[in-house]
Image 1: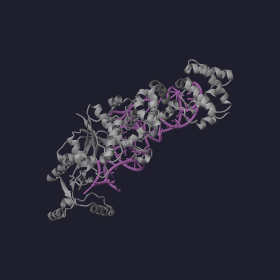
Image 2: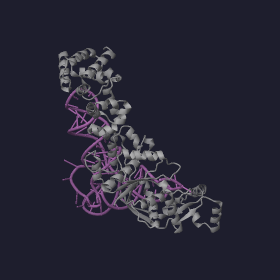
Image 3: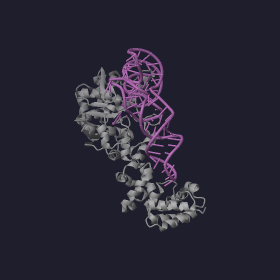
Image 4: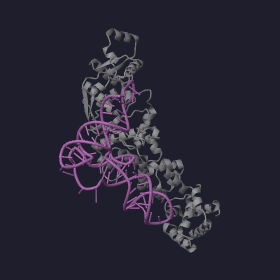
Length: 474
RNA sequence: GCCCCUGUAGUCUAGCCAGGUAAGGACACCGCCCUUUCAAGGCGGCAGCACGGGUUCAAGUCCCGUCGGGGGCGCCA
């Protein structure tokens, strides 16, 4: 059975690159009826934190990536790694290294000054008995290094194809740090093996690590899993996407009003395409179509514009019911959640027309506020443009026409307004624009007659009254 | 510097593995239509196979080189 994992390190927020890796693993697992395991790689005591672990789980939940096993915390499995390292030492496949960072730094510097490329010089592999005894007596801290055998290491990457590296290029890397914690290479190999991981799907920044890990699998006598490396996401300047390109943590996108499904679609379609002329899919449609084989090899640029467009289109097309849960926090922030909950039928009607022209949930909530509360400010730009040429007179007439209407909906108000315009010898627009300002304080809105129907007669008249009172005579 | 990966418009991509009909779609941009505004929508436009060799009747597709881009070279993961 297929079993994959996502193994973030809780040293920072889950950024979009990590999220994309998690997403591809999840898609692959679901597509193949496999298992998706979550493992927290918290073996860097200095930089890992409980809060970040929690936040990463949160972020995955928001994207709707559920896991079947875990979270497995590596910090609780230290003894396992230590035992495995000891085993390699006993078998002569690894050795203790007493070199300090300073020693190595110096030797490395010297080598580089001579124009030689540096690789750990195996000093501690060739230590004499008495030297070892002396170090032991001194209680000198020691790490464990892996002996890289001679030869060539090759593997077939499910995305990139055959990759081959000469072992000459690889140094005797550290397995166990002198503080007893495993390095990434040890823990990742041990855990992937023990958890029965069949496919390792991760970022291309791990390509160079793969041969090291394969060598470790061989040393242990284990079968390596299959590997698939995903192209790295770049910023608009073609550099690896990072904070320099703005806030790139996944949850920051949520907080800026992006729909989880929009983010899901966008990330799924970076480096991969279902191959149809279609921009957005339901999650199950992506699962059905997913194919590691069709993942591109080159690095994609994260296009904020396109994501924003996708988000806007999705908000517009999805029914209010499907975005409601995600919208709630934003409505709360605007202080209008309770008002809306008191009259959900109305809220749904209102949001349905408002959401068609908002790009994100922040905007949707703040625009919605104008429909709920009458205390908005009038947009100065709008006033400058449309509040002129005796608008007040026209609006007063319109108000008294509206007052007489018994049925107050889009079609009756439209008929009434157009008739009045004709009577006054004006273009309907001459009434519509000022009316929009009076009702919402903005120069743009959904169709004005839909707005009238949503607001209703009483509220419409009250807003017209306020505008006539507060806006200048012109 | 060394090693590895990679290259279809400004961007995301289809086509490449199994060579063959004007390189298809989307974002952005421009124009027109619709229209009460702004979006959306419809129609149209701009723009691409990095370059150079080779194989072949035929190359975006296969091979080699150059150049460009990215990643790695930690007792980080």
